[in-house]
Each structure stands twice: as C-alpha cells, then as structure tokens.
Image 1 (cartoon, rainbow over the protein chains, first blue to last red):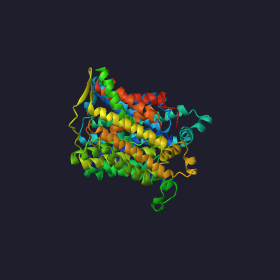
Image 2 (cartoon, helix red, strand yellow):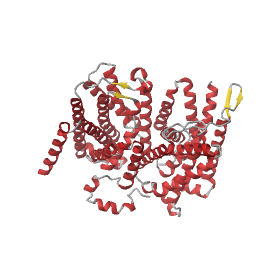
Image 3 (cartoon, each protein chain N blue to C red):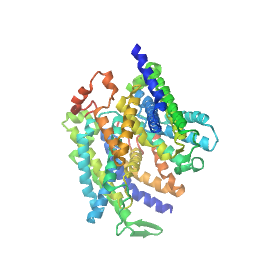
Image 4 (cartoon, rainbow over the protein chains, first blue to last red):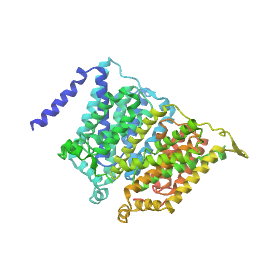
Length: 321
Length: 287
C-alpha cells in the first residue's frame, strides 16, 4: 500500500521539478515526449482497448491544430476558447466519421481512416481563403520570457497526460472499458450480450479524438506555425503505434513507456545522423514487431523475464505462420 | 481537351492496374496491406534509371530484369521476415510494412540521393495525332506493356500449378495445408510475384515520372484506391479500378484545379469503402 503512494508521489515530484532544474532544450524535449505520450495514449483507447486500428487518427490532431490556428489568427480568439472549440470539432469529426467508418472491420477500417484523413488534409490544403493552404499558417505566439513559455507548454502537456491517464485508468476498471474490451475480443458476441457496439465504438473513438484534437491545438500554439503535411502526417500515427507496441497495447501506462523510450532514442541518438534517421526508425519498427509485439509491460504482467524472451527469439511469436 | 484527358486517363490507367494487381494480390492472399508496395515500385523506377544511365538500356527492356530482381527481394522478405508475423493483427502487419517502407526510402536516399531523377528518351516527344488528340508513343508503349503484364498475370493465376495453389491458399488456408501445399513457400512466391509486378510498374513509370525517395509513399496511396475500387483478388477488377482512378484524376482536373487531384482519389476510396466494400465489379470474395 505504501509503495502505491510513494512511487507516484516521487514521479510527480520529479516531473514537476523538470522546468525548474533543466535547461530550455531539455524542457522542450520532454514536452515533446509528453505530447507523444498523450497522442499514443489517445490512440490506445480506440486501437488498444477497442481493437480498431485507426491509422488516420492524425486527422483529429490536424483539425484541432487548424481550428486553433484559424480562430486565433483570423478570428481574434484567445487560446483557451480556441482550445475548447478544437476539442469540440475533433469530437464532432469523430462522431461523423465514426458513423461512416466504424461499420468497417480490420483492414477496411484502417484504410478507410487513412483515406478520410488524407481527403480532409487535401481539403484543408485547398481551402486557401481560410487556412492559407499549403504554405501553412502562423499563430500569434505566447508572449513572455523563454522560461515562462517553456514552462507553460510543459505543464500544459503534463496536465493533458495526467488527464488521459486518469481516463484510461478509470476506463480499464469500469463498464465502459469492459464494453471496449468485449468489442475487441469478439464484436459479434458483444452485440449478442446486449452491448450497443456502434455506440461504444463511437464513444471510444470520440474519447481518442478529443485528446488528440486538444493536443493538436496546444501544438499549434506552441510551434506558432503549422502546415498540412506536418499536422496530418501519417508517420506520426505509425510512431504512436510503435510506442504502443513497445510499451504494451491495451494497457494504461504502456504507451507512455513506449513514447519515452522511442522519442528519447530518436532525439538523442539519431538526430545526430540525419541521413539515417528514418532508416533507423524503420529498423526499430521491424524489430519491435518481430520480437516484442506484446510490449515491455508483458514482462511484468506475464512474469516472463527478458532472458526468456531473448532465449525464445528464434521461435518468433504467436503471429508466426 | 476533355477527349484528350480521357485518352490520357485510360493510357495511364493501365499502369495503375499493374500497381493495383500486385498490391491486392498480397492483401487478398495473405491479408496483409503492404504499405511498402509503393516503395517496391520506386525501387523498380530507380533500377530502370540506373540501367539507362549506366548501360543505355531502354526502360522497356529493363522490365524483365526489374521483375527478376524484385521477385528475389520479395521472396526473401516474405520467407525470412514477414512469415514470422503474417498471422498477427492488422496493426502488427500494417505497422511492420510501414517500417519496411521508411527503411527502403532511407536506403534509396543513401544510394541515389534526394534529387529528382528522370529518364529522357530519344523518342519521348514522338506521338500519333488523331484529329485533335495526341497519343504520345511512350505512353502508348507503357499502356500496351501494362496490358500484356496484366494478361500474363491472369494466365499465371489460372493456368499454372503455382497460380492455382496461390488461389487455393487464399480461399482456404487450412485446406491448402491439408492437401500438401507448402503455404510458407506459396506465401513467399505470392509476395515475390507482387514485388515483380511492382518492379515492372516502376520501369513503366520511369520515362514519364521523375523518381525521388519519397515517391513510394504517394504511389501506395494510389494502390489503396485501386485495390478498393477493384475489389480483392480480381485481376479484371484491378484493371477496372486502375482505369477508373486514371480517368477520375485526369478528367477531374479538367473541371477542378489540379490541387484537387489527390483529394478526389481519396474521396473515391472512402465512398467506395463505405458503400461498396466489395469493389465496383467484384463479389464478396474474402471474409
């Protein structure tokens, strides 16, 4: 019981102290990692808990970022109202897209979300009057000393992460989460048992979307410049999936662990070899999928040690032919 | 103007068909969405470019060479790597092939640099004029070569023992194993054939498109659309899907600014997925 309080308390203390101890570079880097932790956790709700591979999830990030950018630069909105509206737009998009696409299963759903995301990206790019099109749009930046600005975005991302972890934790223990897991395990059976699968799938995707959209909104304000290829980048979703895989799909803390591991390696090691950056990411993806598709958390939950896994590498996983 | 763009759409649609056939073969038989398919086409285009600049080999003549090289590559990838995860869930296999795609993009970047490369053939401006329509010789050649490839593939799947075994494995995995088909090997051959078609498509696009390491990503988007339009596992469907995409893109740009071209393709993809997931022509074949 004591450990259950002391460890989170120490972690909290550690995270709160970051902006006061580290230099600007590190604070920004950890903010970036926190952002990916939120995004991966949000994707985990629809893909890990509910089992729907939403490869187009960046659409909510892009919509959130663009809503904030347009409202702030053209509508004269302040950041917080713009942020709330961005979250709302993301939910509306998730409900509408969900009604269309969540009827599809497996690969068809994955492709449908990718197609919808690309279609919306090109639409945003073509609405030049509103969005400035492909050249991108600038957002009025937050004014203040670098330390204050860095601290603001750091704590904002930290709060978002705590919020989504609380949501994920609650979901994993209540009716909603059981419904999600039942859909993942066997959708038809879940329907027969009286779960309104369509409704729960849409709830799941909306939860995922609202956090993704709000993160997009914060990103737009933080970077104060966005363009369609960046905020709708499919590659980000792939990175999130790898984070989920590294940490453990369908677990509460897995995506966060994965995000910290992948982004730390990526920023500290590969950013020095710009020419190899992508290839190394590709290689890591392939190795993770081949050898540890159940994630690091499975080391704890199954009681199998790292040694066991290494010993059994040549045998592969249950996905083997 | 409209007639000309219809002609262009049909001529290029045949290449799209070749792209779609290889992609939907892997999807239909192994239930893998191969995101790296576009990268295989890109490798094909780079190979043709290299053969052309190093030995003066015409891209049409490098088709068989490309096919052999890409077949070997595809076979080995499936045999030694993909077969280890092929039974996994959607997001395992999809994430895996994404990884493969960016790995290939990076390798191409290291070998051929980030510059755009293109082939300028001596006969690239020659064409046949019929009334107000111009049919460039190069595009006509590409069209005919793509049709021949499609026909050969159709015969391969119907008339050869391996083709029949691929079909059998696709329709009933356990049944195929029971009658003694080496499914691991059939999977490797399937992936190899798909890659070989991609290699051929790469040769076909090399005289009319410039190639850079990020071409693979945009080509695979087209492959999605064609496969969905055509329905899985149908050669004729893929041919129709390719033609439809070719027409939608070229005719669409007559009425809309060219920046809408990509948008149209993906819009069609989503609409067909939602309203006709079995494809335009196809029956519900798998699942």
